[in-house]
Length: 398
Image (tube, rainbow, N blue to C red; front, side):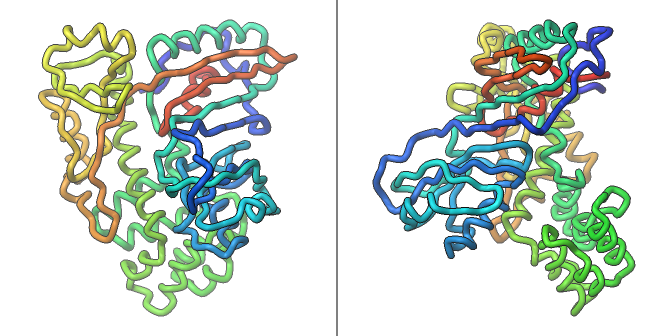
């Protein structure tokens, strides 16, 4: 099934060429620092770095623990991103003087509490699409109009599943307590790796040559190297080896599995993702609360006004359940994967309680500007959603 919401118009395929050179993401904060307190809110601009890598470099430069640095949103390495970090007991002049590859400090101010994941309203995007055919400009505007009127399908998309597209498979192996499968999947398959040293390291791992794998892994494969290092001493102790993975990263693998399951249900629901069914848990966009839909016709006007939307599961051990056919579809998907809600009740901080996520999100402030042969798209999205879905609708070629 196609994931596209808007139809492809004949003759527009292939008219867009995407570039990573002009992709700007700016966090929209939930609140501004008050000017006092022990946590320094440092806004940074980063290029070519994920948020964890930026935190790692800043922690080393300032001599503070990574776990003490707070952040509101997780950003990948694509394009240019601007986001805030909170640093404990660091002077503004010290933070603003940081000179690190790929990181530029922008401004700093104190606040009373540490930033935590989710402490933002959303993100503002500015994306340049290069070499746009004249015939496609009008189509791009029509597509944005449809997305503004119906909402944007709230897919996580491929960027949620890691550079090898397998993060959700690691999470699934964790839930099944199959640690050899988790480690094997973490290492990946050589055929999907273009970097030569990385590929050779993975090949050595799969041959059981763990010392050679440790020697070959590039510097950015720190987790893989640490896991392989443990296997040198105890080759069959895969559970112990996997404990070398940072708990924060383990939780990301579990979150990736939640995301993958959600995306499968949304793809099934896509033709009517903006209308309610009996048994749905309707998501209120003003406050994030959910309620059970008894009479879809009664709630239809609110859905049409984009006040509420159907929701899907981020499965967990305490997630509120829908009813009727909606519940049956969700239970069938879990059963197909050999999973149950109880399996998400993991120890040691990995427990996934679960929550509901709207099947659509609202597109804010859409704008198109023609600049020579390029097209510049600007819009805002709420936190936890991805611009790649919007871009995919505009640039689809099939």
